[in-house]
Amino acid sequence: GMLALEGHMEQLLQGLSPASRCSLLNNFVLSHSVAMSATGSRDHALAAVRLQDRRIELLGMMERFRDQGEAMSNAAEHLLDAQKRQEAEGYFVRARAVGAAHGFFSVECTACLGLGRVAMLEGRHEECLELMRNA
Image 1 (tube, rainbow, N blue to C red):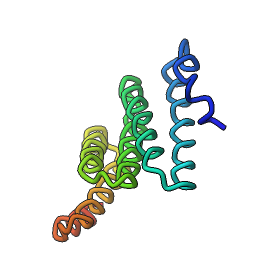
Image 2: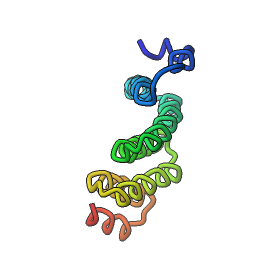
Image 3: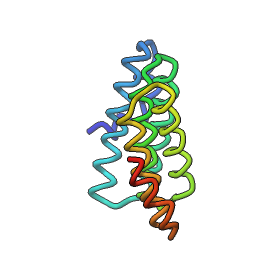
């Protein structure tokens, strides 16, 4: 599958347009997501985040802000899977800001739900309720 090609990823990305690089990176993210689901491995979750970071940067450069915000929330979910709540919270905060700045209500809602989950996991129940209401 795709993960077998990851050692050649930089070669594969060379010469591609930003949109094509985003698509290829997304395929690697999805492969790590499937592997993480199958194995429960935090390594796959963290690898998906590293790849998603590259996509987030490219999506911003291409001004694809809805996709960028969704990628941020996706990275945050992977971080939650890896038990890295504080880092996940940072990605959700960024996703919420991108959604608000560019008028993507669905991105904002997804980020608020994620922030609510983090708050709930950390015992911040009032904050959780407020975030869930905002979503």
